[in-house]
Length: 231
Picture 1 (cartoon, rainbow, N blue to C red):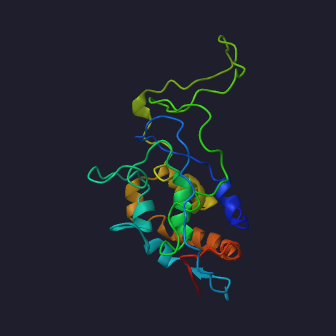
Picture 2: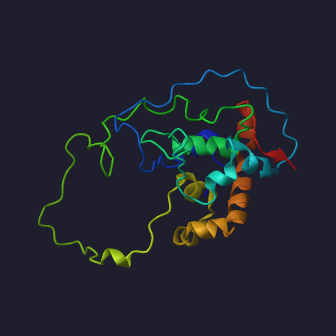
């Protein structure tokens, strides 16, 4: 993964994936811009390396740290609390934007939905989302379709019992942004229990440190306070 992308470019290049959840299945608008106090200017950055421990330890909800959110890589759901990311998720929850914010920003100075509220994307989905699987909107226009009698495909016919796992996307930003290129295949083949055992913790910390070091000047230029501390 390139580590010199500006902050906003990073947020835009990550796939806006959203796991299946509740929601109303409609083409609801993205979160409205949030009125926040003028941020305190970030202190002048004197070093080129940062410690991300504070980022991983900061609280995203009562009793839930960023580390709890991303390790293990699963969808977390507490039925006693309001639904919506990070407690489960609804179809229109800006999962990637919120995850990036809690990984990089000081949550005592900025709200977790700060990046999601930036006016960078369309106001909503063009087509109404389905209320049943696969929950996607219908295609725009009339896309070309292949012949119904095509014979150039060799579809797998393995029984369901042959499949032991699927791509891990409980927290989409983890596999895409926090796992290094050399570890992506092993990560995808592993289980949440491996996460809990710490198999990828050092890789996640190393990747987050590299991204933070690369993006520090961009955060400062945007007057955004980072959760990481200079070394």
